[in-house]
Length: 224
Image (tube, rainbow, N blue to C red; front, side, top):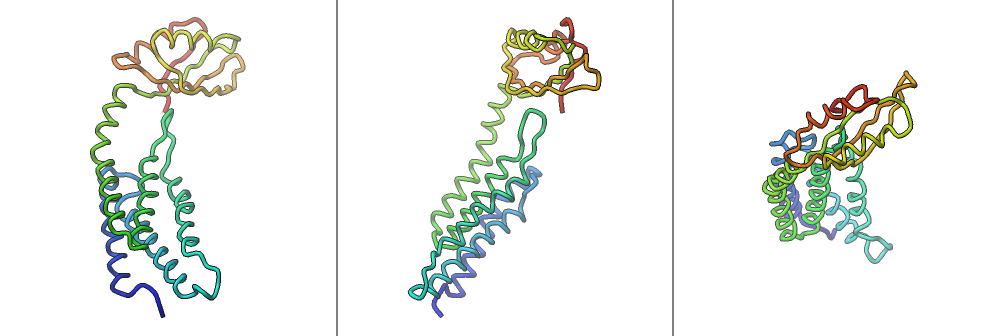
């Protein structure tokens, strides 16, 4: 029966485990939701699916219209469900996107290994690992320059009240990223949850104090 020989199967699956584990180790060291074992399983599973796809094509080519990439292509869409489980919203920020992306790339590495594209898989793994380890430091520096926080501001429920809050934030050089209005049991009050980008060297405590001193503002606090 034509297909990939046993030695090649062993080499490809072990290689998938090693490369997936390399990326997963970096995620595990940062206590991410998807770590060492998850990345290995995704990479090995993707490689296995590609191997099955290739061998099915060799078995049935010429007798039926079969596409060797059809089964493997489902890995790409299927990873969306697994990756979504690592994404969490915390206040004004979203966390887990990098881990979700690393799982998606690991699936691609597994597919490449299963197809026999060893060099492509090695280069991709190297690029991903360096990105996760070293560019994270650059990203941290950029994040420190502009902080994103969530403010909860409870005000009097009158027209134009949020406009006054927005004007004050703009005078402090603060950019409003998003806004959500929440109803309270007391119709005379309203709570605004405001995602803001705070410039460097801006004291958020002074900003909150200034908001609290405004007419019609009852409470200002950092959101969770």
